[in-house]
Length: 328
Image 1: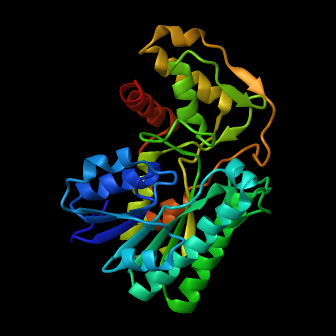
Image 2: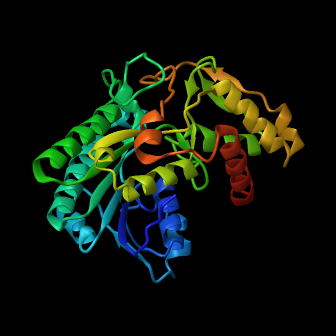
């Protein structure tokens, strides 16, 4: 793969979050100047603690809902990797107003600030939730349905705004529709914790995880290193056809929740044999959940030369190892 030959200044919004902190680490290790903008609403200081002594790292504590803060953050920046958002379908159902303020108004602030600062390219976290009630599988970028949650609406609006800023102002944008990303530093705690870290922690405590529904819902679980790779490819591409569009960011295979929890127990049992006998509990389906999610990654392969490095099982094994050594 190509690499960024010269040193660039990269702004990562939400850089103290799960995905953002992995991006910070990766680009710091490549020798770039990394600026992190985060208000620590969902991110954690512990995620960026190792970077604070790095001369190439700068932390700006602030909120993307504040336009002046966004303008300050983009000063002198080459690329923006916009990860800041309030994730979670249930959170958006519980509090649609705050989700909209952060995910739509905050996103627009970042677009305006990036346009005015003449950044080279604005790459942003889009979402597989944009596919909504579309039943076609695999999901292809050009075929979407109606959103099923306030969160999904906000992420679709992001794509519409990005497209308008590309057409109207010439700002290069690329949206990455993330599919169920998992891996190191993903928070297992809180009401809106993602399923994999949450289940890992429960199993490590010999507590039964609860699967919503019968466990036959499936997801295109995507390991964090594949997501980092896609962000870098989106930054690097010199192909004019590859910009001002959106890409599925996934592995391109699906796993049922039952299969996922079976693998989790298998990998965790290597560390603690008692985990094999922990029961799985089944509960009601969750509002706003789509039954199946499977991405086509053909567009990313064709235009960005994407080749995912980690299958679900390979990524899960690495994630379990990380959690075992960091959650004890």
